[in-house]
Length: 172
Image (cartoon, rainbow, N blue to C red):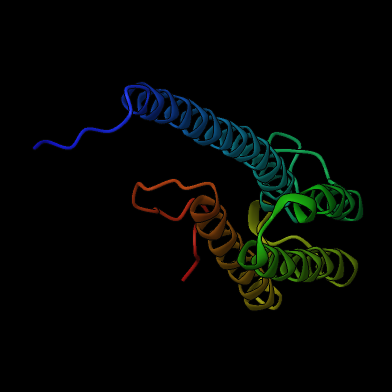
């Protein structure tokens, strides 16, 4: 004697399996699409923040006529702060911690540049004179190190898997 179920059981199980598969696929692809869109937004915001920071990294303490004009570091720091406000809205905890370190280092570097301009005079061909050079080097190095750590955390946040190479030079 063989036992068989009702005639409608097999088609019902097939329909339930098909509907479940379709629903699961839609949920997974929708979640992936949202994650991708949010990742692209974070990538854009992080790039804008790094671009604002790069502006400070390029400030020359004593510009010469053929190199550059004097840049107001206060305005540059304000642009960095504005970009940071956007970054804080989308960044995760590790990135936000690194961002805070970058802001502190940016303010320290800008303050050092302004102090050197107020109390010093240009060295040979517009270089920072020997008396102020150690402070400037220290502030620049701290700023670049903070930027590299931010970039490293931001890359991890947006799931960049290639090996990290520091973008900003560490003087030494």
